[in-house]
Length: 139
Picture 1 (cartoon, rainbow, N blue to C red):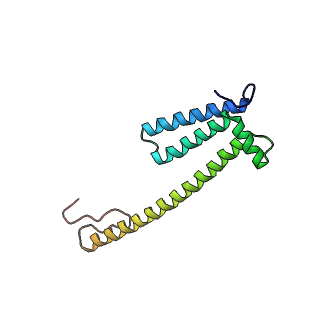
Picture 2: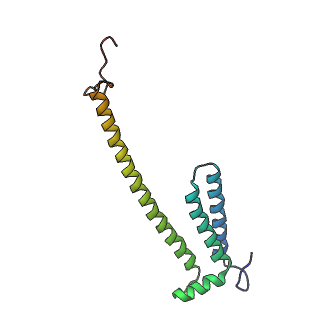
Picture 3: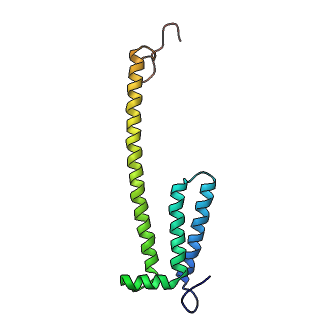
């Protein structure tokens, strides 16, 4: 690995690189198994790449830390990771809201369709217990 600082890399940098590579491998595995959509995988892969860059090239991390006034440069990596997590949580909140609205709309449409079918006599009227009323001759 290429580290811009002279000497051996910080143990935290090595750990971040290992975790980022593992994250990328897990994301790619889940994409291959169709368990994770591509649009979300790109976000996770971007995070992993950013973390590897920050950990590998300590000069970038130290430069960013100096500009932000951070005394411990590896804290920049954790800030990036936390900011990313907050952004993902916000994105997921938007998705949950959208899916909740869609679910409510579908339930309303289903209720209207069921009501129309019952009115037209195509669907048996449910009993209070929730079981459908049987037509004559059925038992």
